[in-house]
Image 1 (spheres, helix red, strand yellow):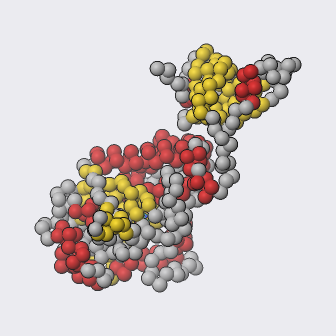
Image 2 (image 1 turned 90 degrees about the horizontal axis):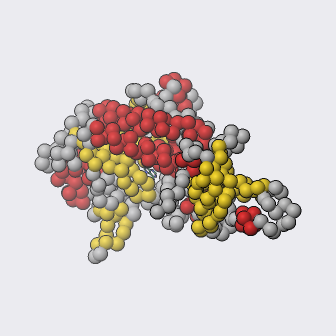
Length: 439
Ligand code: AMO
């Protein structure tokens, strides 16, 4: 078997024969010399061929072959490696001996300046860009660190079904699918089943999996399918316990990203990864409204929920006051929270819940759950829900459930805000939206 040399490995290789493969990024066809930039998933290298057909055009077969190379073709090149500090690209160069065109490419249908929609049509080509490759390496590192933190802290990984007999959140944003003789719904979140792990005696659980929302909006932060990062744990006494777990987890994730990719991220996106200080600032929703009002902004939503502009302005305030990119907005009013959120003892208009805002945008919702069956049923009825439809869920609370709480967090939103990208489309492997089911 011939093992190809990765571009990254060339830096450590000795001068001499090498065999390297990758995509043609550019061909510079000069009078006396030709340059090819070859890229693989680990980097780019300059290949060089001094032409021998200067006096007799067409007499140098290799030069003719290089001139005909199309952008994006996949080549295997054998040649001589030479380290040379004068070469801008990594201080090394490969003098071409022979080129095998492993897979020729047609003219590429997209360029750097193509619209996001066009790039998404050709996502596999768009993903070849080094910055895109970095996005998914960052995501891998981030998730790996989260998983390690959970495992070290005795969480159990679960996989809950995505086909459900009832809605998992509200009836809004629900995908209905035919299911043999009946109807099924795509899970909007693992909410009910991660809670089920509590009476099941699992203690602490996590899941990283797709969630589906039939949300017709075209904003930069919404997808119809997204990866939801969820955790749920027993024995919490308030949402404060959940926030404490959540912030430690994020510190673990961002520390790993900074250590492994901080310099690359800075070079590719011009942005610095900051490992947040503990604890993250906490601001009750009512106080958030006052802060915004004192800075000349009245949240326009009649229900009192923060709108995107309110989130952005609150984040700006937190950055000024605390130098922090994160803020927990806590104690949401019950009218804008689901029936399963626990309400304040003595003030049922407020919930033991929070939203986490990162660099101006909500990335997560968390809460302590209502575990008292009678209160839970009353809250479900109050929200216009039919307890009979929820019976399988209500059963979890009839056989000794520990007090518990957890959160759900959109993975793409975290990565988008971390890398200061304009849309989750840029950081989702294959985006799904109201008018996008392909590729
Ligand atoms: P919520 O509905 O707020 O809470 O969702 C949690 C987080 O999931 C992400 N998210 C989305 N990301 C992309 N596109 C969407 N359409 C979309 N919808 C939501 C956001 C959001 O903050 N069960 C609760 C969580 C819990 O209490 O544990 C829930 O799903 O980042």
